[in-house]
Length: 321
Image 1 (cartoon, one colour):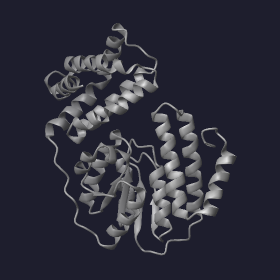
Image 2: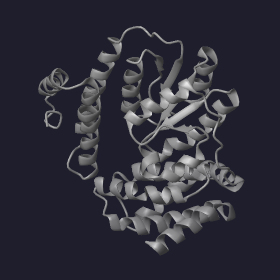
Image 3: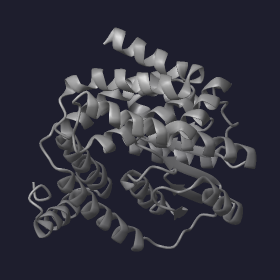
Image 4: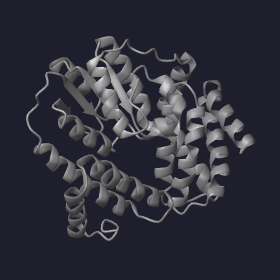
C-alpha cells in the first residue's frame, strides 16, 4: 500500500518492521518478492500504473543491494555468474538470488540486466565460473538465452536458468540446453547447491527446424518495410492509436523470438499478454483480429513464400479464436 501511494518512508518502515519480526528468508520471499508480484498483477489487471510498479521494484532492489553489500566475504571457492540475457530488463529475481547465494558463502558475480551474448562470453572466459545462472521473464529474451546455453555448453561451462516465461510456457524448457532451476526462487537456491555439489551431464536441447531460423533472418531483414507498410494499412482501415508503434514493435519482437525458438506456438501462448498490452494502451481487444489480418497480408506481400510459416500460423490462430 505504501508503494502504491509512492510513500518511500512508510514502505521502508514496513520492511524494517518485517526484518525485525520474521526470519530473513520470509521477508525476501513473502514480502519483497510477493509484494512486487502482486503489484505486477495489479498492473496486469489495470489497477496499478507502470510508475507504481517501477517505484516498488526500485525500492525493493535498493534494499536487496544494501543487504548484498553487507554480506561477509565469500568463504567457498566456487564462483557463480548471474544475470539476464539480452533483451531482459527485469532483474529483481536474479538480484535476490545473488543475495541468497552470497549468504551461503558463495562468490557471486552479478552482471545485471540485458547482457549481450559476446559480453557474457568474455566475462565467462575471464573468470571461469563454476556455474552461470540466467533468468528471463519474457519470450523476447528467451531466444537470446537459448543462444547463450548453446555457447556455454560449447565452452564447457554449465548454465542454469529460470524465470516467469518458463512457468507460463513450460514447453519452452525443452528448447534450452541447460538446467531448469524450478518455478520458485527458493527451489532455485537448493537446485544451485545441488549443481555445485554434484555436477551433472549437460542436458540436450530439442533441435529446431532450420526453416524457422531462415525465416527469422528474412523477417528481420524485411521488418522495417513491413512495419511502415503495416502502419499505412492500419491507418487506411481506421485502426489508429498513438501507441500502435509500440504495439507493433512488441509483437514483431515476440514473433521474431518465436521463430528463432522454432515454433510459433510459443507466441500463441503469449498472445494473452499482447491482448493486455492492447487494452492497457486503450486499444479495444476486438482490434486484435483486424490487426493480425493486416499483419498477415503485409508479411505475405513483403516476404512471399518464406513468410508462409507466419501467415499460416496467423490464419490458424484466427480460425481457432
